[in-house]
Length: 342
Image (cartoon, rainbow, N blue to C red):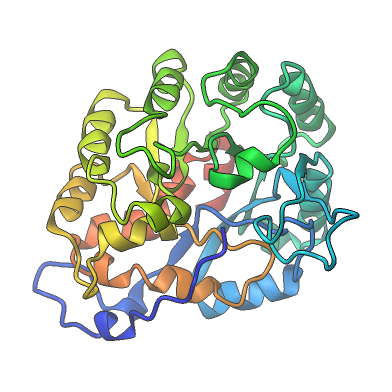
């Protein structure tokens, strides 16, 4: 989740070629992937969030909780700082949505227009999940604007959570997707395309079956199926671009979250230069990509997380860059939300 600081200031200062995007200072952003709380369900709060949104020219944010809580185990000598900090388990935590809803209701009417709550606190292996989600939607009509981030294949976190490993194409989530279509809610899925060791798209059929069987659901694929943990073992997934290209053509309900683990080594090379193949792909599907910070409960790096994409945005056509930076996330929200927030 939390990302190391990426210094791309030098890249951002590169000259922009004629006909391409405006200088960095002109961008306005939407953050399509933000967690209001961390893995201990703690947050720096709304004041900090809006302070950094304003500093980073971020007009809108997806506001979600974390669907699991990390346990401070009796046998651990100190409180962990992150889910991977020790061997203790994590567990599904529905109260995360209560925290998000409380924060949203605490905001002023003007602030609420910039917040887009996504409901995530349910067990994706439980066939009762859709009934729980329906109750939450009925308790606060119009509050929730999406579902997720839903954790399925998620690196070592999957092994730390009690119970079976969630799959994007299991029966419990199929019921959730039907509900999402009923309420016109986009669904953000964290579904790794492979494991840490396998150099092939091991888990790709799970996400593809979901896309194929639920064509009326708008799926946001978190990190395009990648993760930093995968990259620690495999520096770059050579099969990622090929599969994304095919899937975007085949599934019009697929949208891609370009949050931080996609930035490098895919969008930008080791020297901070935009990758021509990725520029071509994003330009070919200008309404299907969006940016996310994936910050968790702390917002100090929020503005940097999005401005790090500017060397890539600067090489896109102006209109495409504007859509990726801000508009695509807003356009995937329920129609009622789009009408009041644009």
